[in-house]
Length: 196
Image (cartoon, rainbow, N blue to C red; front, top):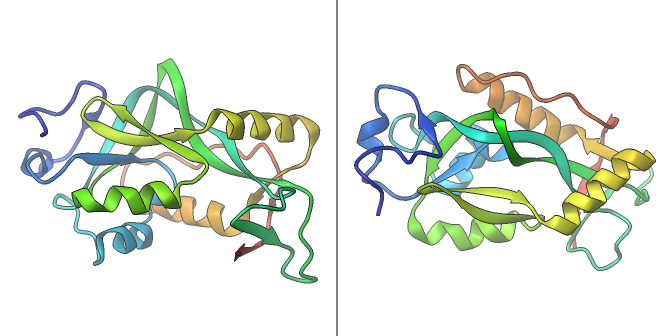
């Protein structure tokens, strides 16, 4: 049950914030989850600002590109291919995550989902762990995924999928007051996502 006031870990903005508190426990979204199309998929209908989500920020956390899918692992349910020749490059595909950083703040949205939506969202976010931030949830990198991402950035085997980057950039443009997408620490390339 949500408190009468927003939780201390999440600063809310906007005139309709208080009206949202009785709906459900929210999920703080900072990357592709903040995209209108992704929210529509999660909600089963187009999202409505003030009812389904509110702009917000998460103090004490910072964005990083430190989560990845290891495209060299043969047992992955999802892999990435070169769309030209169909090969599976030996790379690690990076995504955004949040990490504790006392002096920082992450801009995003708080999405209000039906209670039954969390298991499907957890399955979608396989490289992440759902964690509590005040009375909301957010997704953070699994430790092994974060370690692989850092190593891949250091060794030059990291890539960022163009479709993912463009989805995040579109989400940031859609939500007023969102900053630019964080600087990419690796090349942004076109890859085809394949589910096995």
